Length: 256
Length: 151
Image 1 (spheres, rainbow over the protein chains, first blue to last red):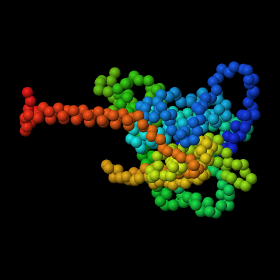
Image 2 (image 1 turned 90 degrees about the vertical axis):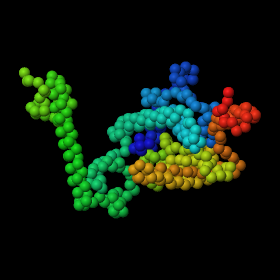
Image 3 (image 1 turned 45 degrees about the vertical axis):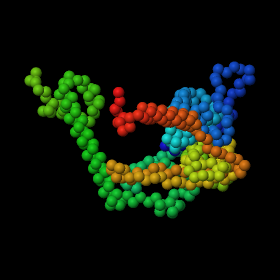
Image 4 (image 1 turned 90 degrees about the horizontal axis):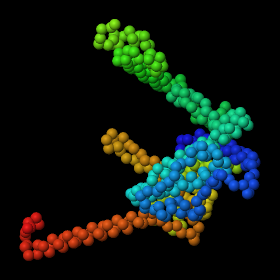
């Protein structure tokens, strides 16, 4: 669900749909198309759509295909994607209903991977829509059209990523908002917290450096003819010459 | 109808259109007995009554007269080993009231297996009866002899 949250406004998508409809090429009716049209199941209608096919009730396994991949979705038109979204949404609701009832009855829910497949398909579909939206906006306005993110100082004196949103009244005129969103960074407690936090970060960094250094010594001891370039690339913070000079680095043999 | 960010509505602005709603709804077996035209759902916690009504009407084609919602508090438990408190998620339940003449009965989703297990139980009971009768028959003429004593 977290993937769904940082999404552009929906009017932007609506523009995208309108645009796509106007640009669609007209195919003559007698042309044989190599592509298969989007097939949907027959509408059973009403609330029974929340349940699986009756032949799948009480079985141990339901065989299904794979989820929709991004490449398959990219070649679909916007209206097809829009229809497919609702097919997937209904499928997910159906699977969740069946899962819940199976749990209630303490029975086996057949093929639970179906839920994952549907969710992967929905994520992929949304990624494709986002992609098209972004391309459209970059072409039209030069911006991505995504929700803007800025870095602000949080209540604990640490920088946090803030997703911008719309306000009816500007911040500098909105006394109520200002009262609510005051972060007293000069507070003694905040200062103490930041100091201790930074101290902890520094300590962790130093310990990691020491660990790496000792590890490099061990490596040099066991493999004296190893590739120094690769070692340097893997441990850029370690002073290899210093490690070589270390007493611990010398093996248990007479040096040549 | 979804958890996305929409532009703020101001007078004269366009009507809100939801293109890819991501709310979920589960049809659940009602915990308490309900009138025949009431259907219970559990749904995304952000959904309002209007959302539920529109969701059912536009996506499933189910007309509702009224929708009522409640949020059930998740149960809290104490961890057996470490003693901290664990809370389950809250659940939003929606009660959709269908028109008066419509009836919805929650179907039995596991009809086959129940019959099979009942048959199996009956079978094992019959077998137990048979063995007991054999035992009684064998020991008719020799009372107070333990069961293992036999030639």
